[in-house]
Figure 1: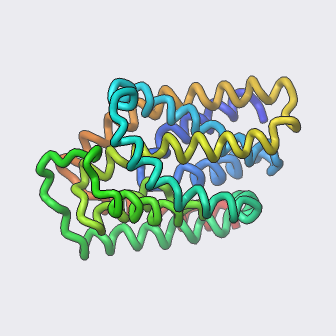
Figure 2: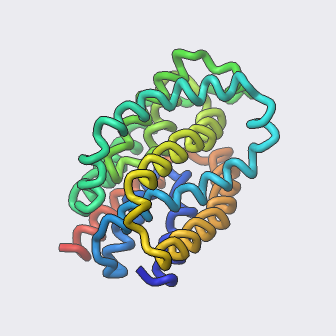
Length: 255
């Protein structure tokens, strides 16, 4: 993989990580368009550069993360279902990352689900709820919803947002919780993958990974700020439409 390709993929990761459109799906499809050959390193790269996007979350919420023990309890509880599913299904996940057809189906079906979800579920009024006081049961159920996103193309953000709103959280609260839940989820996922595969990386590949992660960090900061402003006046229907469009376009391009 060239440094330019790593830069492009990093930008794609940063833009898409916190939007309900599947960053992993976009990375795999972008790699296909750039004609990057599938390899263990590429699969690991697509997982590892998510740490760049996580740095954007840590930077935004660092003071709160340092002092708020109650928030960490809820994040850990929400992470447990995904951690268990990811550990058990790791080989399957890696194989699905190399299958664009699966990703396209997940993108399209997920788009339909988001559109229907917005028609059926009525958002709770935002009364300034404090996610540090989120009921533990609610945090766990959000984690169960997030566990579905181990399927590439589903979208971790979409799963957590839909799950949170389904159990009564406001749009603002679940988007913020989704940002923060990415920290334990992505740190563990990336750490696990690097431990298993780091020995196979060459010296030049580490520099490629660094470029992708830095690009993801910078663009994720912008994407997070934009999404917080967007949800104040809009729902997620447009993202559902976008996902369906990408699935159709991807099927046409990659056939």
